[in-house]
Image (cartoon, rainbow, N blue to C red):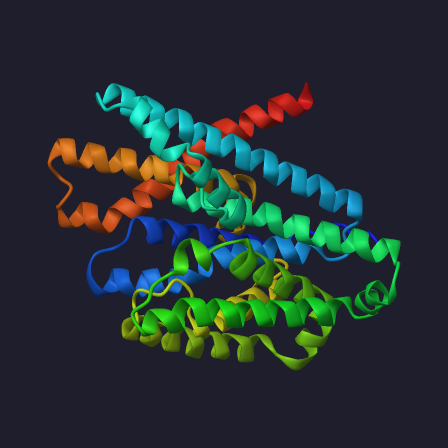
Length: 346
């Protein structure tokens, strides 16, 4: 498969920044009905990151996919180790029993759950990094299988790779909705970790964006920017209505179409004239993964401070706390990115 250079895309970077804001709003929600609406729309946030990775994987060589897989896997191990150290320190200084905590969170069962469903024993949001690792690994194994080209099945997949990945993503998303939103509607919520994992969330959105890249020019010829904006606006209103109808779901039917439409719209803006948006997009591109990884540490620390200062229930804090957490997460993320750059130079 021909190697394609990664292009700098302002629209995708801005979409990543929006997704980071939405992720913060999932874990540090706004009060009242505004918070419910924001949390429902925010269901699109994590799929955006899978889609960005899948989009840029189209046309990449096997060595490049292997390098990305190793990089995300190493980050997954590192971030889990950071939270492990953080939690042990919190348990120790709070006077709790560290051995009891270790037995509860570092058991064989918890690590088997981590391997099978990406659910971290230390922080729930870290499932994304494991799922992204598995998504890259899925593509790597698939491309290696195709390259060897042995057997009729391998040849069929090679000749119909995009159709295969699109069909697989549709099937997995249907299973996601069946086990997630539909079962939740009937009072059986089993979404975490059985639905929110690499198989039913990571691979399908990763594969969808891979297919979008393959048919990007065809999509542009069929849908103008105005038409895409109109479709996205309608979908967002429907999404909010769906969230109000069933607030406990993790992924909604409309979320899938919102993600696809928003991603295509972002692709239309390969260059943005607004320097502020470009700057925000560049920040998300450079620090986004670390902001995602460290956000829970920031949010929990801020909640502890709010409680100590007696301002946790103040209206201004309830509305501003997500944005305070966002800013501090970006500031803290400068440290690991700087360390990484120093290591690379040396």
